[in-house]
Amino acid sequence: MSFEILIVLQTIIIIWLLIKRNKKCTKSVSQATDKIANTNEEYKMVLLVRKDLKMQKGKIAAQCGHAAVGCVLKAQKYDPISLNTWRYYGQAKIALVVDNLEQLEQLEKKAEKSNLITKKICDAGRTQVEPGSITVLGIGPAPVSVLDQITGKLKLL
Amino acid sequence: MSFEILIVLQTIIIIWLLIKRNKKCTKSVSQATDKIANTNEEYKMVLLVRKDLKMQKGKIAAQCGHAAVGCVLKAQKYDPISLNTWRYYGQAKIALVVDNLEQLEQLEKKAEKSNLITKKICDAGRTQVEPGSITVLGIGPAPVSVLDQITGKLKLL
Image (cartoon, rainbow over all chains, first blue to last red):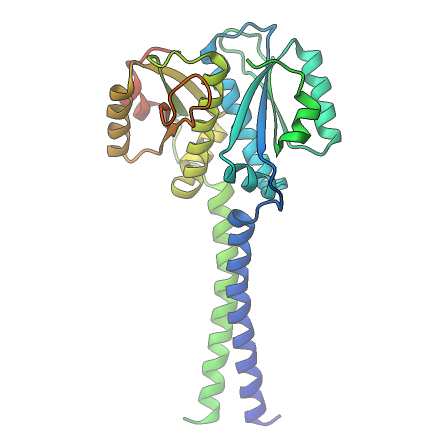
């Protein structure tokens, strides 16, 4: 092989590596921050709080914080487009009441059947509730209409 | 310049580009998921809730969810090691009470002076509070001792 051909080949490889490098950056940024769902519908996240545990408001606030963060971290991995759409529409979070663990787990199953992100919070139980108690279930972010089919009948906290 | 030198130079560029490409991947993965602070101290996040707005518990839960998510998203960008350490130690979140906006903003300034992550939540005000009200301030994740210097005197919500 002559030197000229080798030089041309190497030049092509360098250009290809440089192009690939830039493409990689653009792609990862757009996946992480840009794309939103092609819809006019608003998105929300719901936080279902167990009524029967009779938690104080500070406890409820921390448990809802756990659930919201848990849903966001899961959505970053498994449903970034819903996450971005929800952030674009103002990150609505609605706290609702469920009567007990049974109702909470029924709604979790329904949400999972609809392929929605769910995050069930299990409390360490240092204060107020028994160790290992399930306190809150987060569902979403997801379109309002989809969530309303599952949790539309629940009362606001 | 002779052909031989050009070929050697191009080969070096190709090897350098290939090495940089692999390093980039390793670095981004370890920043995003692995490293935790070299300490035995536990980490926490505090959520400071304004008492004077007299919000209902459902409102408080949603606002604390906003603050917790906001702090986590900021920490992913600016302080991933604290975030990982906090997650490793169980993601403690503590809801505390501040008397009013003035006290909330004083504590925000103190936290910023200590280079801590902060997230102030401004409510859309569709329910319960005036549009644009600051409702909750999230600080952290950060070491417990550092946060206690700033918020140690506040009462639990």
